[in-house]
Image (tube, rainbow, N blue to C red):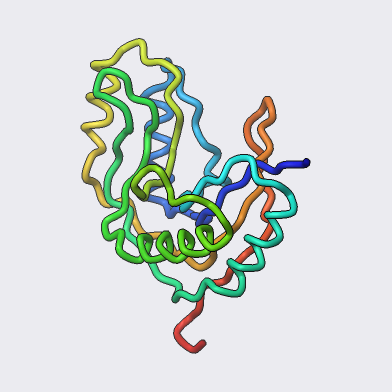
Length: 190
């Protein structure tokens, strides 16, 4: 049986405020082992599926296209933070100001996936835009000061206009994402 590594996400094109933050963080934390995400691949993961049988990919994709109906919207990016403890950060991220529309999309996707035989997500949905994965931190105090310096700054808005069902192939230079199915969110006239 053939499998694809898959996930469902919202592609995100950040504006100048968030892009400048990423540039500044990379420079300020240059000596640390952090794998920074290429801004061209920024996305907000709604549901990671992992190894998905290829024959199920079509079923899930077609159900998403048929059943996902939501308006497009804008969302404010509002803070920088990290997952993991203060001593062992694992992921550097940007958070969102209002997560209600994102939660609505997540709930719709959960219903589709449950109907396709997937169990409900094990973890609660915590919307965030991953900036980097922390491998190790040599100077923890410096890292904490930098993160605190940029906490709670306005980081602009992002338009959410489509949901993408992606295939992810892990390569030595980083993951390669291939869109399998896309769902365009509705504008006000549709």
